[in-house]
Amino acid sequence: MIAKFDIEYIIHPQHNHRVDTHRTDDPVEAEDFLMNLLVVGARIKAIKHEGIELEQSKADRMLHVAAERLASRLLANSLGLDAAQVKHRFSFAA
Image 1 (cartoon, rainbow, N blue to C red):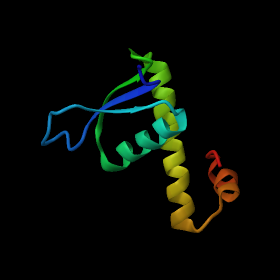
Image 2: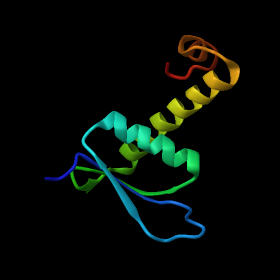
Image 3: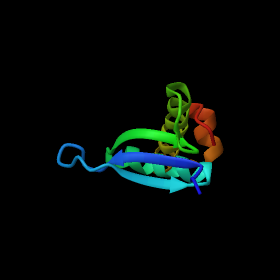
C-alpha cells in the first residue's frame, strides 16, 4: 500500500548524499516532519502524494504552512506569547 505522503530528504547535505524517505498517511504529521527538517537544515528533495511528486505550487504551499507554523511556535516560545497573541501581532496562524 502506498503512503499518502512521502517526503524525500537529506540530513546534513554538506556531508551526506543519501536520500531518506519519511512516509505517513497523516497530512498534519507530514507538516510536522517538514517543520523538523527546516529546523535542522535538511535538504528536502521531494514531497509526494500517493506516489506522485506534488506540483511545485502544492509542495511550496506545504512548506509555507510548515515554515509559518514553525515561526509561530518560535515567536510564542521566545516572547512568552499565546497563539492568539502571535496571530494578532505577527499575522501567523494560531
